[in-house]
Amino acid sequence: MAFDPNAAAQPGSGVFGLFNTEADARVVLLPVPFDATTSYGKGAAKGPAAILEASKQVDLFDLETGRPYEAGIFMLDESADVRAWNDEANGFSARVIEAAGNVAGDRALEQALEKTNELSARVNDFTHREAARLIAAGKIVGLVGGDHAVPFGCIRAHAEAYPGLSVLHFDAHADLRPAYEGFEWSHASIMNNVVRHCGVQKLVQVGIRDLSEEEYAQIQGSGGRIEAFFDVDLKRALRAGEPFDHACERIAGSLSQHVYISFDIDGLDPTLCPHTGTPVPGGLLFHEAMAVIEAVARSGRTIVGFDLNEVAPGQDDEWDANVGARVLYKLIGWTLVSRGLSTPRY
Image (cartoon, rainbow, N blue to C red; front, top):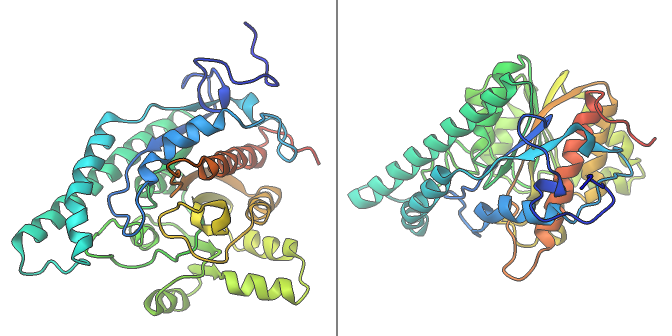
């Protein structure tokens, strides 16, 4: 049967109802079902599978980015090793989280923390190895988490492949803590680890509205290497009558030529992601977030890779996964547009 992009997803199809293989897809998605350091609401480890299922309801013609599916999109199978590491690590991390990270003097808790950090490091190695392999094969790589700790290895691989890389970070949180509850590779520390260990030229954060004073001081003292477009400042500018497109242009203009996008779903208004692990009032509307990404693509910069994290499906509610699947398709679409591989409608 010939593939019909206008038809319902067929049995046996892959992500977005496509029948691509890793070999013929330009875009390869790496699912990482790991959420051991999530300190509030669990469930992000179920995100990749939920997004995969919801993606089959997404219409393949996109009013903004054209026909991203024509480039070929393929999602790898979830790694059995990662799933096993997640189960094991959650058993250890739960005890540490219950103690709020206060493990000193309790050898059992200290060992639980050490084991969680060790398993998290294994995930970092796995994502780095897989992303580097795919980049070397000429693929555009998108990681699908999992909590926001998991893309560290993927970002590292892109920074190695694209010197001078900027990271565009959508999030409610700054994620700049040196560690959180003792977890060296915490979801709350991902951008601190990226800045310290990945050699990126610049970190640009959008939608931030929940951060510690220590994190704020780190941003202010970074000498411009970290630039935050705080949610409250974006909303003040809107109330003062500034078109949001102007803010998008400022954000895009702050980035280097090669851009990696790290998208924590809680950067959006929590009505769009009610089951995410650490929802925060405020945030970007769907089309606001997509307008920022569009501005990057239209600025002449190249989006070289991306990740999407913290999509946690509700027990009887597919809303989070539906939103996540559409964010993912837009990320793919604008990445392809930025590379001249898809034609926007206008």
